[in-house]
Image (cartoon, rainbow, N blue to C red; front, side, top):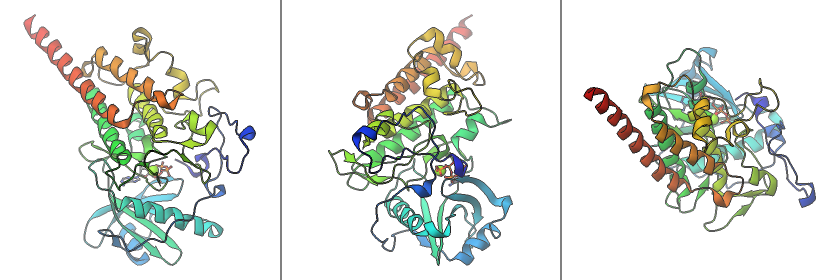
Length: 361
Ligand SMILES: Nc1ncnc2c1ncn2[C@@H]1O[C@H](COP(=O)(O)OP(=O)(O)OP(=O)(O)O)[C@@H](O)[C@H]1O
Ligand SMILES: [Mg+2]
C-alpha cells in the first residue's frame, strides 16, 4: 500500500479516558511517528545469507523501475536475480535519514523472527543486507503477487471458489503456526495481516509475508502493548484499538476481514466510496448469517459453478465469528483451519452431487 495510507491508532502514553479512538474512522499516521521498543541486536542468522549493497544493486538492475513489484509502509519491493541465478524479492527499507535507527530495529525484528520460522504457508526469508545505512530483506519470490491484486486486479481471471478456499486454508495454517507455541517456543502475533500480505506462488498457494510487526508474546498472557501500534485501516481489531490489549485474536479479526474479501471480491477499505460504504466489515457484517441477502454480496466475478451455497453460508458464518467485536467470542486460528477443511469438503461433495444429478438427467 502507498506510504501515506499506512495508518495506526496512536495510544501511546494516553490515559484510559483519552483512549476512545473510533476504530471505524480512518486516521492516517506516519509510520515514523510511532515508537518502537529497542530490540536485541541481531545475531548472525542461521541459514539466511548476508548480501552486500553491490549485490543488491546488481540483482535489481540498480533498483530499476522495471523491477519494482510494489511499495509498502517500509519502502519498495523489487524483483531481483542473485548471482546464483535465483529470482528473489528484495525489500529495500527506504528510511528518512533521521529515522534510520527505528528502521534498523524494525529490520532486526523481522530478520530475527523470520529466520527462525519455517512453514509452507510463510514466505521464507532467504537473506538480508545491512551495508552501511542500507537495509534490505531478501525473500523467496512469489510469482503470483499478492491476494488483493488477484481479487481486485483488472483483466486477470478471477479465482474460483475452490482456489479461494485453498488460499483461506493456507493463510489460516500459516497464522495457526505463528500462534502455536511450536513456532519459536512462544506464540507470535502477526499484527499486520491483510490481503497484500498474503502472497501467492506459481500454484496459487498462499504464504504470509511481513513479520516485521510481530511481537513475541509470553504464553497465557495478554500483552499490554504500550510501544508501537501498527497495522492497516480496515483490518484493525476494534477491541485492540479501544483497549490497547493485543491478543492473538487481533489476527483472527484481520483474518476474518480477508475471508470477507475472498467472499465478496471487494476491498477491505475502499476510499473511493462514500463514508458509509468504505469499510467492508460495516457493509456486510449484518447479512453474513442471512442466506438470502448473502447471495447478493458473493463476488459476481466468481464462477457460479464453482461453489455451493451451503459452503458459502458456512464460510460467511466463520467470517462473522472471526470479526466479532468481543475477541473472546472469536474462534482460534486452529479452529479456523479445521472449519475450512470441512467447508472445502462440503463444497467439493456438493459440486460432485450436482454433477452426478446432471448426468442422471
Ligand atoms: N516475496 C514477494 N514476492 C513477490 N512479490 C512481493 C513479495 N513481497 C512483496 N511483494 C509485492 O510487493 C508489494 C509491496 O509489498 P510491501 O510489503 O512493501 O507492501 P504492502 O504489503 O502493501 O504493505 P505493508 O508494508 O504494510 O506490508 C506487495 O503488495 C506484493 O505485491
Ligand atoms: Mg507487505
